[in-house]
Image 1 (cartoon, rainbow, N blue to C red):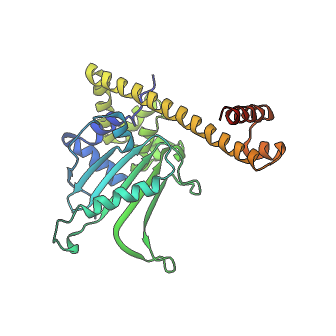
Image 2: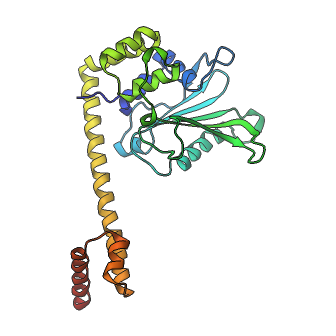
Image 3: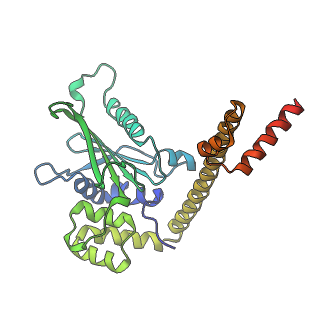
Amino acid sequence: MKFNRLNDLYFKRLLGDKNKKSLTLNFLNSILDRDATNYFTDITFLDKDNEPETIDGKLSKLDIRADMNDGTQIEIEVQVLPFKLMAERSLYYWSKMYAEQLGKGERYKKLKKTIAINLLNFDYLTDEKDWHNIYTLLNTKSYRKLTDHMEIHFVEIPKFKLKDIRKMRASETWIAYFSGNYDDKELEELSMNKPIMKEVMDFERSFLMDKVQRREYEQREKALRDYYSYMSESYEDGKLDGIKETALNLLHLGANMEMIVKATGLSEMKLEIFKLQKSDFIMKK
C-alpha cells in the first residue's frame, strides 16, 4: 500500500510536534523562502490537540498553528478533498487568527503579521500554472502593498512537476516528499543531498515500524476512504435530484423533449420515466 504522507495524523506528528520543531522551522522557512536575514529561529505551537475527536471535525479543518520568534502568526492547513470555497475559507480562518491576537482594550500596534499556508492535494487556482501562489493586500492601480500583515499561500501539490532531485530548491524538496511521486530510491538520494530530509525519512521509518502508530494510520486512512465515498455518493444523489427537479420544471413549462435533453443531459427514456412518475404523483393527490 502506498504511504499517504498527507494523512492528517501522520502530517501533524511530523510537523506539529514540539520535540521535532527543527523540521517545522525548516518547512516554514523553505515554503516562505526566508533567508539568513529573516529566518525563523524558534516556534511555539498554539493548538493543543494532536488528533481530531471526530473524523468530520478534522476533515472540516486540519491545521497546525504556531507563534514564531518574531511574533508572526502562522497556520498550516492540509486539504486533500476538493473544496470550491477554499479562498473564502482560508480568509475566514486567517481573520480569526489575526483578530485573536488582541485582548479587550489592547492596541492595534500589538498586531503581528499573520500567514495562512494551504497545502492542497488538488488543483484549485485554475488560472494559475505555478504550484505555489501568494496573495496579499495590494492597491489595484499601483500594486503597492497596503500592509505586510496579511499573507495567504496556496500550495497545489498536483501542479508540482517532477524534476532532478539535485537541482531542487528547499521548498521543492518538501513538496517532492509530500507528493508521493518519488520512489524510495529517489527519496534516499534526496535525503543524501538534503540533510533535513534524512531526519524526515528516519521519522517516517520509525512511524511505520511502530505497530500502534501504523494501526492508527491505517484506521485513519480507512475512515477517510469511507468518508470520501459517502460524500461522493451523497453528491451524486443530490446532483441527480437537482437535475430531475430541473427536468420536471421544464416539462411543467411546456418545453419540448429535445430542449430538455440538451438542458439536463438526461436521455429521452429517463425523461419519460420522470413524466410517468410525475403523472402518478398527481393522480395519487
